[in-house]
Length: 235
Image (cartoon, rainbow, N blue to C red; front, side, top):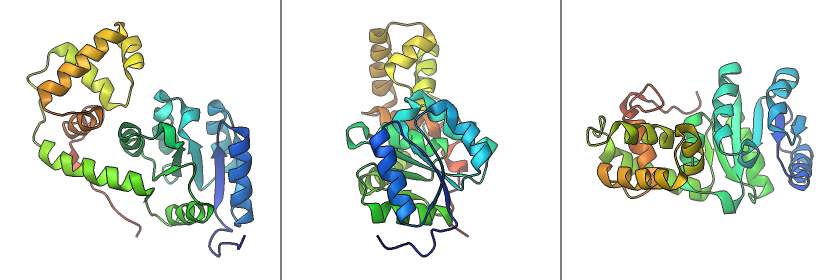
């Protein structure tokens, strides 16, 4: 495999739960000239390895974060603001809600694990130089969700929701699944499903992804409204 001319100074930490996938990714990156400074299959090791190995990029398997662990992305960025985080997931786990919450958490890349090696290396090089990289399906989905956000931008207060529905929507906006919400609010999972269905109907959206956009537009879980957010490219 030809070495990428701009890859040799890029330090990468790879966090992947599957030992075979971890070995494959690290082999690809090293063959491409990247400096793989650390690798792990354990979520709890990521923070320590970031501190001791000082990577430029963390390539992280979203399944290793186990859904609610998306908060780890924000925590890493608070610790190392310049860190480039690239999230990877398997095609079977890929969906709009995961895409949206991953990007809102601060990841600068979202790729599927079956990405071509050359595209993976190009993505890491681009992110190292300040870019944001999405796989083809993710790019299409994000464009569609942003288009929906334009129509949702004035739905900021949700006066039609009860206080409990507001609580549920707050947790939906963080990307929590029904089981996690049930644990957080001490409710039955069936009750949470009923609340989510009622919320979607009341705020006029048809999916959880649209509900997340609407909630984030209103500032739930962020302290910001969408109209206050600026997206910038590399300088």
